[in-house]
Amino acid sequence: MSAAMKTRPEAGQRFPFIPLPRAIDRARELYRVANGHDVPFSTAVKSWGYAEKSSGGSQTCAALKLFGLLDDVSGSEVRKVKLTESALRIVRDPRDISPDRDKLLREAAVRPKLHADVWAKFGGMPPSDEALKAYLMIDRGLKDEAAPDFIREFTVTMAYAKVTESGTIQDIELEQPDGELPVSLAPVSPLPSPIAVDAMVERSLRRASDPTPSGARQEIFTLEEGDVVLTFPSEMSAESYEDLEAYLKLFLKKAKRRSGAPDASSTDDK
Image (tube, rainbow, N blue to C red; front, side):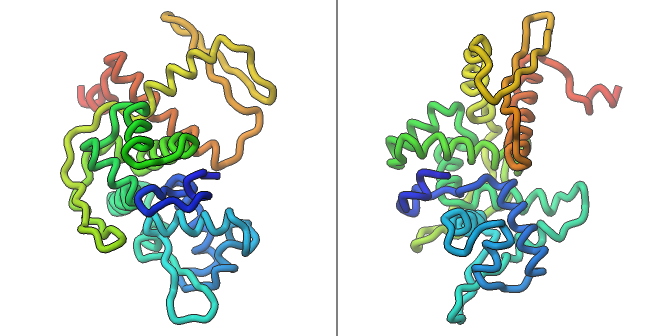
């Protein structure tokens, strides 16, 4: 559970309770129930497996709203919600490869105000999680326990939306709350190395020599340069698998650049 969401931070400190891939899954679950129509809030949270008054349901709703995937419907005595047009276009798109859906996902990834502010501050992805953590805690006033939650959510969201692969976000104008001027996020300079990868990899390597913790498994891959050790929980939810998959993709892209291995597209052209 995100500490930042629990303590009701100021608008500039809020960030989604769940990363974008999980939010898209929740939008799909709601679409299967509502088919694009507005529904009572209680129906929405039940579609996500929560009780009406649970904190998880409220936080999931807030996360979808921050990503621009859900709106409150006015004019009703009972609270109602509805998927936005962007959310409907994402979940209804049947194509395996869809530039239109990719653009909508990139827009959703930078729609939360804190996401947009971080992007604008660093001119793209921050160079390290240490630099981002300092900015979050010193300049934005996030609490110690909230900053790591944001870094994890932000990293997974950007990887899923392929922001770290595209290097730029084209023609995005976001309306900011509280009467603030729109923030332009296009174009930006080429991205530095993906956020948090260096530090996360170093921490993983330091832990590799430690005994395998209870409830975890360990896989060892032997390379000429040394062993690659992966420690992971014995039991893993589908959502956690998606988060891990997004991180591993970032790690492999980083390792590929360091090794100087050619891109598959360039070898195919030869």
